[in-house]
Length: 118
Image (tube, rainbow, N blue to C red):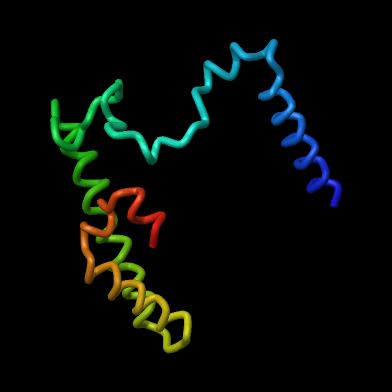
């Protein structure tokens, strides 16, 4: 109970710090907390380099392989975990694997508004 109270007090202190007008400089350093779902073009001022569509060197190719195909490796491990034991948890693993394999990469590239709606 003590740690839960301690964390709640620290969170309350952080909220009070964010709403204080004289410390507005520190809020600007962390960025805004407004929602970006309804923006028309949310990537117009993105300073981050896109390593998926524009691969500059071999490290970008390795990152692409890890992030795009690592999901399938993890999914195959979950499938094996679901088939090795007979239980309701294993059945849940199999249903989840079937769902993700059915939708494939399209499941990972859905729009944010569509995922929030469903």
